[in-house]
Image (cartoon, rainbow, N blue to C red; front, side):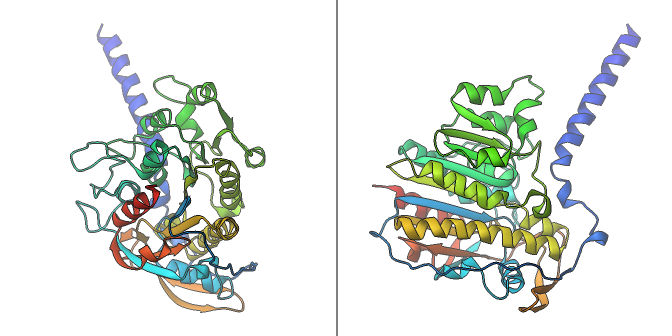
Length: 388
């Protein structure tokens, strides 16, 4: 009997350790040694930036594209601008403001509280996903759009169950509850989501196969971006990696392609749509104090912004709002060359900072996003624009 108890305890310990390692692996981008970080982006291939005319129908948008550069502050933006020869698609945004990012319990927010503020309009504690300080679920703007009969989508270069995208899909007391967050996806009617996190839907401790359940609900469940990009209508669950997607050098143009794919699908809804697009790994480069990482991710995010702008300029009824949940790294641009695209970065921390982050807006209603505002003001303004 004693041996049996010992074996039971040993098995429980192994399972607990396995679960702990699985959870911590999701956050390991915060802990990689900065000794290997690259402080200089040497320059690379630059892309052409198009200027779009700001001619719109009406004063309120039919469609809203909300784009979040996780960890993106002014230095990250300007680092990307320098690397691309002094030009970004972001320059098309003539209405510019700043967002204060503090959470309810900390001067320096984490991505969960920051994402929840941007999705729901509620300040909450660090670590919270879609719940307030009392751990009570609060509706997010994507859910509000869904209730209005508007098509919705969520895209991320991280796992789709990670803090920021999760804040637009789930309600859980802690961000590390990845399997519970994945389970919340089945409680929604979201039209399209694309990101990593396949294992959170399939290799679960409760034995459920959420990929199969999604298929039973009518979703195309695909894992390859080439196949995902072919989808033009219907419901789509694009799960592009077991956990997180790799960094830009390995994943390529996944984010711009995913953005275009979502727009192709969502534009079928005559009532309009709400789409959230996250460039997740600007933050990861900041945690690692790696300028090369930051700049590549910033440029990738800007190219996705270019895809959104192309759509909005033609559609004339689409508002794009671009901001960040917080700044990461306390980054400074210490040197650079427009011609070669070289960027030299410096960092004050390996964590988030408390400085305000930029807010950019393009489209009908863009003038509402000027000046200083709280992060919770942004979803409130967007929600008001959805009232028809």
